[in-house]
Amino acid sequence: MTKPFDRPRRLRSTPAMRRLVAETSLEPRHLVLPMFVADGIDEPKPISSMPGVVQHTRESLRRAAGEAAAAGVGGVMLFGVPAAADKDAVGTAGTDPDGILNAALRDLRTDLGDSTVIMADTCLDEFTDHGHCGVLRDDGVVDNDATLERYAEMAVVQARSGAHVVGPSGMMDAQVGVIRAALDGAGFSETAILAYTAKYSSAFYGPFREAVGSSLQGDRKTYQQDPANLRESMRELALDLAEGADMVMVKPAMSYLDVLRRVADEADVPVAAYQISGEYAMITAAAERGWIDRDKAILESLLGIRRAGADIVLTYWAHEVATALH
Ligand code: PBG
Image 1: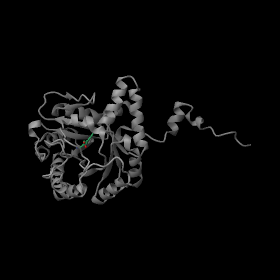
Image 2: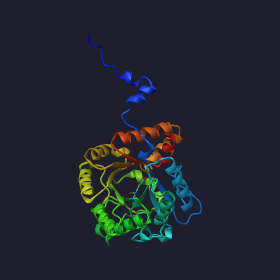
Image 3: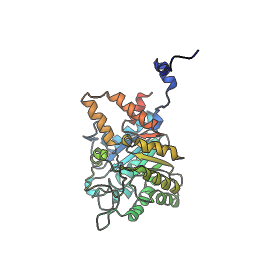
Image 4: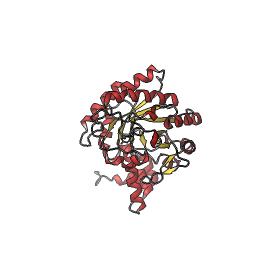
């Protein structure tokens, strides 16, 4: 007897059957919540291009991070937004132990201890008056090696303030190695590095610039990667691993799922992907117009990023989805 034809639909026939055979899972621990904390505001300030996301005060951040941790998210990733008057050419507020990001890290570590993973963005763009991720040469181009010194200092201050993980996101050459050496030299050999390994120069960062009050002139094309390139990400991966990255990240997520798959296949460390501000804004805007089902689109997007190889997903929906998954 030969069977007439194959019937894959048998395994899709009931919710229980589909659940049994699902190849990819989404759990609260897979999700990391990026959060913004701003100096000089009295109450949480909505970000208009990211409805539902706010710049927190130190107090509201403590509350929101505590709730996210209680919902079981894998961690939080903190971004600081200094007062405009505190921005300067070298991003001094980022290395000031009492600067907004470092103060907030201390708050969270005090509140949460080791109950969740506290991560810090290790980059200067939120703190510079020109909005670039590093310090500038006279000709206006970001000075790689001068920037590395700032990152090293910043990472050490963040570790001292309570970050379990530092996340260098500026795409400077040798940033991981220099930060690793600085952390070890300052006694923070246990602080991990989540390296932004493949970070592309993307239009989808638009809403983030509002979120951190950045006034960037020009673009980041001399340091962030060209969206045309895939092989280049393998080179960045090899360098980051050789320099000591504990985890690596691909960013953005949805337009770079092929990069994510390649990185996940090659890397021998956990792989993260960042569903960025523009991805959040797109789904939110389409859902507001009634053009897509918001909740289903969110879950599908996250499952797709997981399926492409992400162990960890940074998403502004982390808290909400973690709660829904219970
Ligand atoms: C740089 C940084 C950016 C984001 C995270 N870290 C902005 C940029 O590179 O322009 C973007 C995150 C998002 O868009 O959600 N510090």
